[in-house]
Length: 407
Image (cartoon, rainbow, N blue to C red; front, top):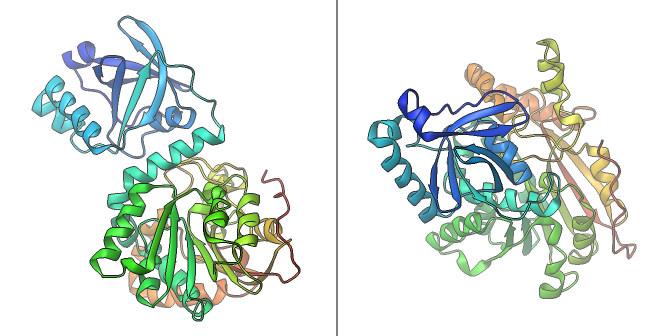
């Protein structure tokens, strides 16, 4: 594991006021504050690797003056707790040290010492806790993250151009993993009624606030729900109650097993209804060629093994990449694939948008070329993402097959 991106204070402050975090790559010295049995740590940069390791497992081992102690690690998302922790950092390290190291943290992590052993890495319950916390923590800045990136804007433009004609005659839509409402709000403005679900309550509050500001709240329904738990909607809304469903660029890739999603949608959607999926693709042409030709085969193959770890994807958590064929097989008992389009095939992924900016004068022509190639085989199989329309079969199927191996 790389060394810490967030070094502790130097000099006397380092010896008097730091601890060592045990990681797989060795000890990482960090500044800290303590409140009872709770230790608070700050990651100054989102690229720092140490918080990802302990949040992935939920476990932190800390070398303190009294010895090596361990405890449960979690991301701090409550604004009051975060503010209080940062106040303690300022009091401990002084205004100058605080401004230098802690004033604009990417993550604040709490370690509760002496708690029962957290769940092992890969445990699905712990994964969803981490997922919810990460998206709660970025909800307020998510729009800036999307709108400030040329490729992210392209992804949303392409998904909306795909969704509008597919759902032109559909009144009631299900938005799975709505985020900050990048598709929700435009579709509300078009007259649709939408049930928006997301694992993050903070994201849902952002969407509700936007809808209230535009007077659209009467046609918006929200529910905090992970994609895997969509089956809970059947009891509340009824079988065949949703006219169409969509999920773009995130929620489906935060599911290691999509079979429950396929099964729930088979019950919620009537015969002939559409489900539009925007999915992080296992086979990304730009990455395979770009990283391969630059002598970085590990990055070229980064999506080939699940989960795809933070740092090799644009997500803030580990995710699961799907190819077009593997995704289709998961849904093929109750759905038939209608149309596929690769998104960002010749253009770079959003985390490499700097290359698109260098060609900004030609971006419009490149975007048109990308859409032309992504709309045809085999280009539609090799985008950074793919958009896929599935139609509910009329054969009475009510479930979905278990997904194939993602290895």
